[in-house]
Image (cartoon, rainbow, N blue to C red):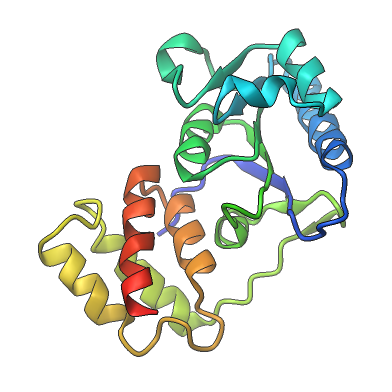
Length: 210
């Protein structure tokens, strides 16, 4: 079961030589095009306000021209209706916040390697703005079944107890095999509607299986 209720695009952080400005230009252009088509005002979401003035001119201009919010500001500051969302260098909690704003509209993500989002991109069928193609989904049917079982057992956010124990049992012997990596698992859970803090908690559990 997928919880994706928005159109998704991203710029993966897959080239250490790519300038952040080049990545930002692609995402900003896509979001502004979507905003024009929808007749809606776009929103910028970042982990902190520091990202608004870090030398990436496209992000700085966007932050000054349109509404912007951060994980700390949260939903209260940027209360708004549906519309296109641009999220820059998010961790899981920040992406979770951005997804909430993007439901019923669209979301563009500028990835940072500090929080790989390939699993999210697969589940959300995000268009790779570098290629114009939908992100290839390399997960097998068996892996998708495993991921759905992990999602179901995350109802309590993978806190200590039955759900956490079941998740560990499910992933014993499958985690890390045939491409079922931490990045794919965590990103998939975020795309399937699990909260950012819960996904971070699951990541710590996976580290115990490594």
